Image (cartoon, rainbow, N blue to C red; front, side, top):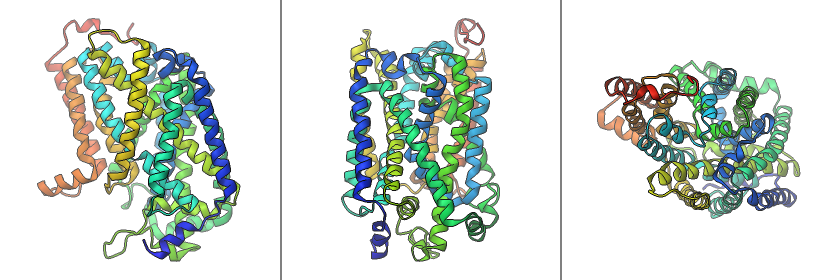
Length: 523
């Protein structure tokens, strides 16, 4: 690493007092995990919070989960690379979430069925083997999806605190954060997750608003818009123009917007925890605002980071941008936003904001770890066992799987080195699950002729989305001498494939006694 890069990372306003703020916050989270352990006495309470979550707590916990530090980091990266055009992802997410809230699409029928997980619905609608297959694919795609969470979150802490990026610091931060998350997630389950999510929602909201106001004050509105226009032209404002995005990418983002609120298990887990369908729909309608903000503000931070390095620290801009000769940038664009915040925020304030970001980190990790571990327990292991598992056995296995998954994401974050933007990586790994799940959920809930064979074909076809990962995509593209493929192209092709095989499989191989397999919307 060059001396210029080391200097860029080391110059920060983060002080010993800010470390004290961060440590105090983390201590509170651990105490909560220890305190609520006594409430996790059944799988319903451990992974579903006893289905007693009200509207406003539901909004807070959904926002706390979906606005993680990984969200802030990949959104800032999109803003840094794509400018204001990245806002289309936020707008689409908000619109789709509002429509789900108004209609109850997918989530209300699932809540009426009183299932704890999506694969549990697969068994009710199709059969047990579909549940096991769906649970296996869901766990695989989901765990791979969160494989970079730990590394990217640790990169934020390294960037904002001034720790060296090329030494032992990243490894140490990843390890410490993982241990903290594992402790209180293993102990408290969903009750712990929801309580800490609420606290994190409050702290995070304060940090987002304060930082945004300071960034505008530092850079100025006119300077921000003029710089983006000069650097990116039309593509910095119009996502359909040639540049970072394009029409196919916008369509892909509309689909992922629906997925993130109505099909993605960590969001659906909140829906299944609500105390009534009316509270569920209100939760989604209000969450549409937070789903928009969770993207838009971090995009803006990434834009501000770009403007800062272009207009106020031009000597550092080249660290984050690949050379015109095709060489790689010395520092990942992911470091741009935290380095910018480290210079923007004063001592004391930077500690509060860092605590808010670590809160966001923890709120996402706890929910995802609990979600994937419970899927393995409830939808893969338990259905395969000949004897009924007791509540204690299920909770114990879920806790073991939380630790195993945590170790995997620690190792994956250290060794995976794909070239995709983080958001594109997450969209395509999530597609391993959701491209196959879309037909099962929509078709199973709203189409009487949906069959078990069609469901299994759809799930298996969805696994082809793994080809969208940058190393595999490039290999396939070169081997078949195809024109340039993007992850959005692969994702859209996989959606078309899974929908086609689901319909053909259902029509060609109808399920026996199909008329008995009705949904709650038909009863």
